[in-house]
Length: 100
Image (cartoon, rainbow, N blue to C red; front, top):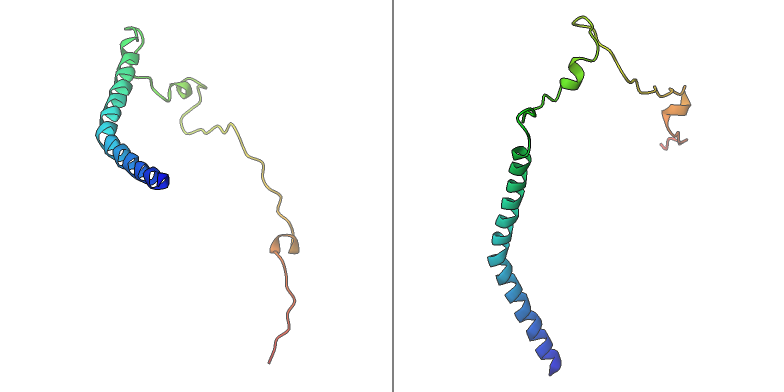
């Protein structure tokens, strides 16, 4: 008898939880979104007039070197892999006999 009450209580709890989440989840998501938006606006509000909102993402590269246009400087070259010769890179060979 207690097992039946246990199963009924689980089913009732499931439907109450499902219905409650359907009502409360949009409310909580709206509050979280508002909190995030207010936090982002607060970051821009704390900046002074000397600090602009927009920072050029390429400003670190503009004044690196004064070199003529069209010249390319490579900072990093990955090491080249050694190429094997012949059967070292060809894979695995399997001997077979042709059956007629």
